[in-house]
Image (cartoon, rainbow, N blue to C red):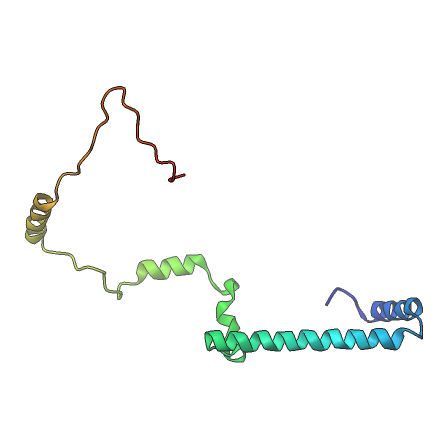
Length: 130
C-alpha cells in the first residue's frame, strides 16, 4: 500500500502504542474506526450518486476496454486506412455534373463586401471587445 511490509508495520504499531500510551490507545482506535466508517460511507454515497446520475453501475463496467495500454496507434491508423467498407460522407458526383454544379454555385455566391478605410482614418475601436 505505502511500501510498508509486515515487519515495518509491526514496528510502526509498537512505536505508536508507546507514543500514544495505553490510556489513550482505546480513544484513538475508536477515532480511527470512526474515520474509516465515515470514508466508507462517503465512498458508498459517491458510488450511489454516480449510479443515479449516469445510470451505470460501477460493478458492471468493463474497465479493461478503457485501458490505454491496449491501444496501438499504428494498428488504429492501419485499420483506418485499410477500411474500405465505410461509406463516404458524400458520394462523388459525375464529372459533368460537378462542373455544372461548380459553375452554378460560383454564380450564386455574392462577392464579399469589403469596406476600406480612407487614408489617415483610424480603425474603429470596440472597448467591450477586450
